[in-house]
Amino acid sequence: QSMATGMAMTDGKTLKDYLNAEQYAKVDEMFKNFVGISVDAVKNFRPMFLSVMISTSPKSIGCQSPGSYELSLTQTATAKKKPVFGLETVAEQFAKIDKRPMEAQAKELYEMALNPQKAIDEWKQLVEAYKSQNSETLYKSIDGRLGDATFQKVMLDERNVAWIPKIEKSIGEKSTFVAVGGGHLGGENGVIN
Image 1 (cartoon, rainbow, N blue to C red):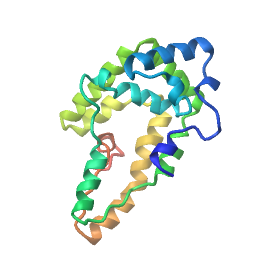
Image 2 (tube, helix red, strand yellow):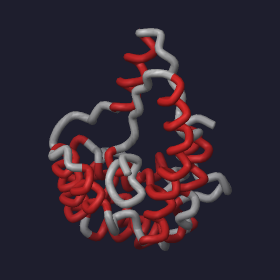
Image 3 (cartoon, rainbow, N blue to C red):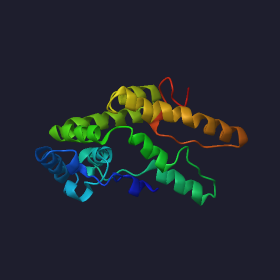
Image 4 (cartoon, rainbow, N blue to C red):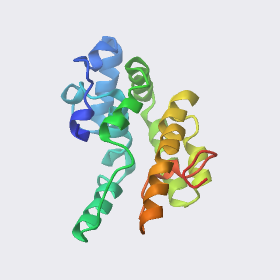
């Protein structure tokens, strides 16, 4: 499963199945304002990804679309003929995301549409925490922003615990460069601990 195909809801439903007409119109207005397209063009995407599209749009962040560290690091390693492997598959990532019900994701997207500037400001705070290079500060900045404590545990802690044996095996065999999202570093169950 590729990242692009994985962004779509798997049950054949669209955002319209989770929002009433008024809510959908509010989300559409936000999309037109921040992304420059109607949400109709991406209504089959999981709502969580639609939220990320808003938060990281050039209009939201005040600059061109950000690059992908993952893509850049992968390209560099490939060019140097270094082996690259993931700590989890794309399908495993989406299985974790799907632990957050679509109804809850859609509700959060609608709530974002009621005050998009709040979500943008929170995203900017995360970026500042990331730039501070303090993993504990970043982890604390994420705390509570993934919907609820249970989902945060799924998205961060459980994944970290699953990755540790893979990381330990690899670093025990050869020199290894490990790259994970900054939010995975801090906290009691962060990969650093």
